[in-house]
Image 1 (cartoon, rainbow, N blue to C red):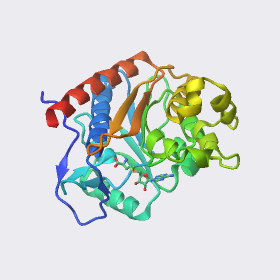
Image 2: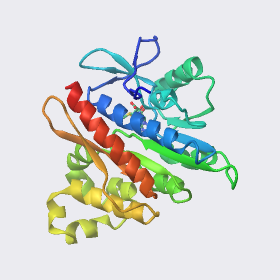
Image 3: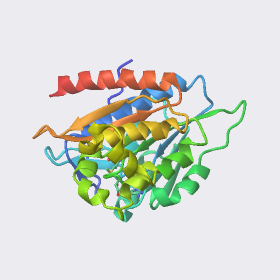
Length: 284
Ligand SMILES: C[S@@+](CC[C@H](N)C(=O)[O-])C[C@H]1O[C@@H](n2cnc3c(N)ncnc32)[C@H](O)[C@@H]1O
């Protein structure tokens, strides 16, 4: 069987479509390949497989450099050969939400989809409640993609989902784009951004008095600290971070970080990351 290609070209449909940079295709490849290996590998072991997308977008995105339009995360996850049994999507921008809703109705009405309009950090309890019930004999395994523009992701949001159930996460961590660029602002005592991101009000103590490297390297600090925070929820304390760099200046932009409580999840991730890197080299 031919391998699933997550970069799915489409014709513009007249609905709102954000413009994104070309490295988004690498992100789409990673999330799409993970969804594919997850459902094909787990369908015989679990009764229900659930996809959550907390920063879901409009469903389509146009690449600024080429003008070509592709499915974005949520619709890629709906296009895999073995679909999830349930999709839960959250989007806070009205134009993107309306476009997503329309596209889901038009192209994927056969799937079980629940859409939330609003801020996922605020609506997370409702999102959690939308996860279908499960029990012995009707098991359920979820995967959650978290794709914010910035560090605007509260650890409490992740904790609400991953603290209670076995859930794999792929989280975009804007450590360079947001973390490093705004370091001076975030260091100020009155600024709560990183306390919310890490779910730790006392982060400045570790940052200033911890590992010497940290005081000059906020990116490393945040990455290490996040792994420890995930460990406190039962996640395997391993850094599985795929770096995305800008294609023009080759600058580091963000990481796609994977977290699982189970070695099989980590194994799946490593396999698709290796494949995604090979594909990327072939494409450029
Ligand atoms: C980087 S885009 C990702 C879109 C999509 N995942 C993709 O594959 O292209 C982030 C999206 O999250 C939305 N967003 C921003 N803050 C949000 C929040 N707090 N809750 C839900 N959606 C949010 C934005 O409107 C935007 O569509």
